[in-house]
Amino acid sequence: MSVAAEVPPVGALLRTWRERRRFSQQELSNRSRVSTRHLSRVETGKAHPTPEMLMHLSDNLDVPLRDRNQLLLAAGYAPRYQDHRLDDASIAVVMDGLRRLLDAHLPYPALLLDDHWDIVDANAAVDQLLAGCAPELLEPPINVVRVCLHPDGLAGRIRNRTEWGSHLLQQVSHRAERTHDQRHHELAAEIAGYLNKSDAATPLTGPVITLEIDVAGTPLRFFSTSATLSTATDAALEGLHLETFLPADDETRRRFDQR
Image (cartoon, rainbow, N blue to C red; front, side):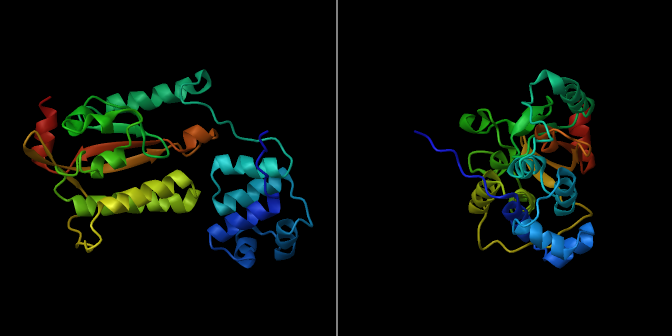
């Protein structure tokens, strides 16, 4: 007989998120304009928060949408945010629009990634970057961070692997700190294992961090931009981000413009 996991009281969950953000009750009170006395009563279960209060505190604590649903459920309310599969018909228009952006970025590489850096879709230019990777790394779901730094992936072709790897580790670690998702923490630990502990932070040159990679024997340089849906109200869409690569030198631009 299976036993359902016990759901912590809503006050305990709120306290956990406050502590994760390293906020004192006073700091959260200053940000949210909710008295410390009321915050204390909510956290200890002496006061029951309304759904509006939960959403207001979640805004100030930057709680991800899935976890906001958990707060609502713990307080006895219905979830507020949908969490559809990415192939669900209800979000097809959004997904189609994002895929059009991938094609519009040609001839340069662009990827649509989920919250864990797994590839949801990519344009045809990405194939040039992934050529030569071990087949098992290209079995769905393809994790682009793992592919970049795995010894059987792109690691041997990335000329500034230490710099680029440190950049990726910082991104994943930052997201793990925000979400406290176990998969994010595991990915961060995996990335750290690919980087040499003795690697010191190298001085950065140029206005942005670039990806310097050999493609078919030619050294190419890209800088990347990342875009998210700032108005997402579906938990699945909240984690999506569009990663686009642009030439960082004339040689890279000529290589792709000729295609």
